[in-house]
Amino acid sequence: MAGYDLIQTDEALARMVARLRDARVRRLAIDVEGENNLHRYGIHVALIQLFDGARGYIVDPLSLQDPGHLKALLENSPWELVWFDAGNDLLSFQHAMGIRPAPILDLAIAARLLGKMGGLQALTGQGGSARAKDKFQRANWLRRPLSPALLDYAISDVMCLFALSDALMKELEDRGLMEAFQAKNLETQNAERAWDPYSNFTRIPGFNRLSRPERRFAKVLWYARELYGRNHDMPPGNVASKQDMRAIVDKGLRAANEIARFLNERRARNRIDADDLAARFREAEEKIDSALSIPPRRA
Image (cartoon, rainbow, N blue to C red; front, side):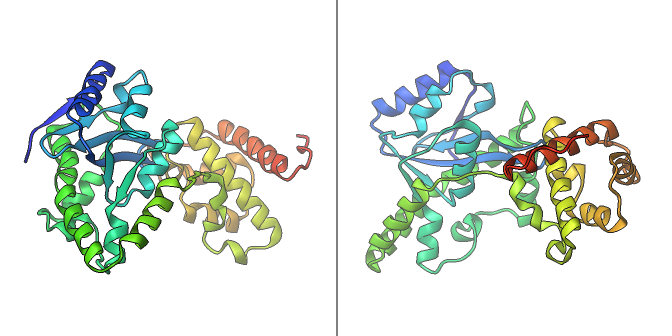
């Protein structure tokens, strides 16, 4: 595996961008390690891995002060960003950092047009078990310092992207599918991606079979869970699972102290604070009523 540089300062990132421009690099393989409500609340870009064909780079966005250098690296740059399945990463950049990477080349789109199923590991024949890969993917990428094993795993995926790109682009040309690929690729690049964690309340099991008052309460409960998670930097699933929320609805629990007691029954850590949960319920009611243009209810 080619060597890589760990970029942890604005000055080092600026030098890297200048070096890539001076070398007239025309494409950069890219991958991202992020956080999506697994260890902390919300969506975060934790690590950016790059390969220019000769050397790898791991950029630590958590250590940077000036986002301008990242914009110079990723937005309207002179190099094409060669990605595999860019959608979730593009959402993370747009939502967490206000960055819209372009131009991109999404190899997953090419693979699907060619009828090739499976992820990057299947398409490239990379070694390692699916279990080991899942362990790395579920690691806390926001924790610092990152171990050498995590850094080696992170850079490994980008090292194979150019070879895969060359093979897929040739096959697209040979089969007359390049125009279709370019259209879908551009659509992926330019799509507006919004993260609205409040819109998924219908995912509570059996939501559509609930009575109208129960659906109203379930929606408030979902909003309150999100607001509590955000307030405590806790993944919403650690506040209450979807199954927990359905049980709360079915048991007729409505007061915050009753709900907190139920949620705390089987946990020794991340215990729910009843007073703060009550405040989040009030905030949830106001948020929902405001969206419906209904005056907030009085306490």
